[in-house]
Image (cartoon, rainbow, N blue to C red; front, side, top):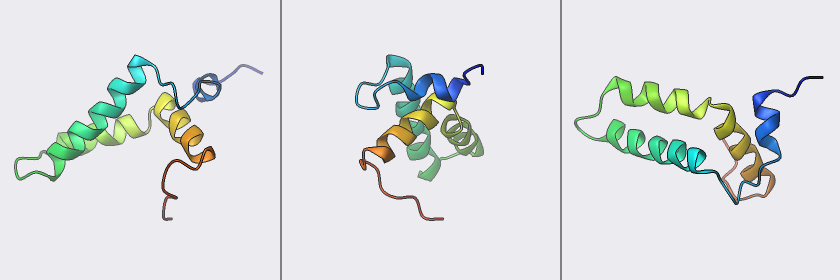
Length: 75
């Protein structure tokens, strides 16, 4: 079975993120901050949505949740 992108990232330690992952997480923070500001744009929310769906970000979230280091998401 061929590994998916998400599975490839699954083995990486969530406590030791890559520079690329840190850039994605930082972008989520910046776009969220801009989105909630008075001058926020729809693009900010589109960017946040795309970044959250990224396979590396999803694998990191999964790892952090397994370690109980993130809040439990409300359904």
